[in-house]
Image (tube, rainbow, N blue to C red):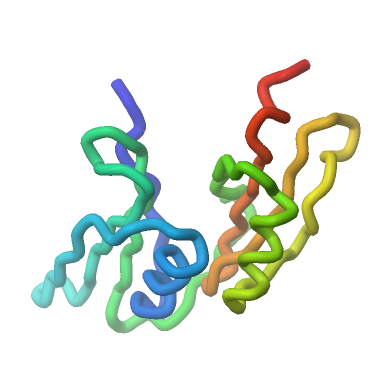
Length: 132
């Protein structure tokens, strides 16, 4: 068994695919409209669906936004340099909600950004996690 994808409901598919491809450097792997159901699915990721877990962006045509609730936490992405990654996100017009630095009570270097729909994305600096 393996994780295939995580689905996020998005209010504006174009805005979201631009964020994940242009700000975070993912690729659109496939996209399909379902006119009878009035929704579109776009799959984005760093690798293929056969080799990597990816994100499924679901856009219900009649729903411009969602209440994210309190159950979902965040998506984590490993980056070479969390400080540099935050600067790149800001330059691209993205929103950094927690600047890069060591996590409280630990040495793992993290940062948090937010996608256009308000989903949190954690950057974890390579080489600083998995240590106790």
